[in-house]
Image 1 (cartoon, rainbow, N blue to C red):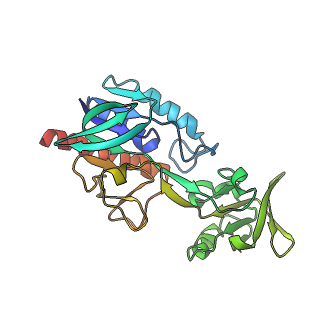
Image 2: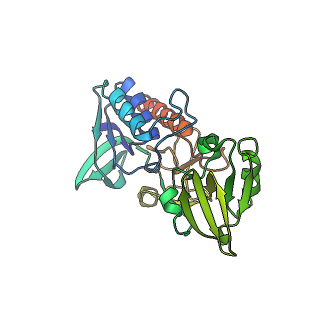
Image 3: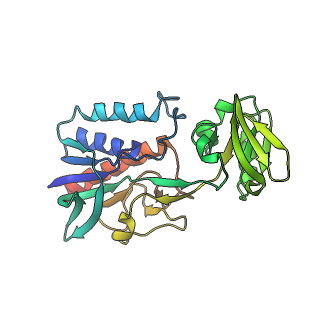
Length: 277
């Protein structure tokens, strides 16, 4: 019987495991090996780790957690999560594992615009977050390939960073090619636009079925609804990271720092619940 099972080995899940380990709580971390930022070589805007490879960040996190004997890390995929009385059961390879609490840190998958050549540049010269990737294009032209109402705001945010900001409707882009120092956007009407990088607005979907399995409340955006400590609508189940949205926020917060903070707070809430019980 575990005090907590964490599903997801990204920053949110790793931080939750570290916090629970420091409180000597018997914890299992399940890591599927699939990560939203798998195509990213350098993660940014994280204090003391600005520019670090996300894979290295995960490796370091695992090494730190290894110092705490009560935490087990297993490279495995959970198939189901179910509530049984006051306990929760997570099934892994047909094995039911019982826990007092479950922290869902399963993340999301991005669905990119269907523009030929775009996927090959995703996570490098094409991104969605100016806070995470904007500075790398400093002093050079960029494109905001986005037709949403937020596109103009994003373009204005980038104005102090880039030499030029081009606002481009995705419907105008026939394909994207990489160049020696950036991107070439080939336009439907003819001609092209050369830029250092581009920002898009992919849609996203949850990686795992657990919110539906447990009938958890979700937000209009499709994220699991939580309170400030990651508590969901089901007692004992917590959600953190990109697929969770605290009720006081306008939407999911897609950043490493936010995910780490959410993981810590959910772990603190788990410890409090164990003491109260």
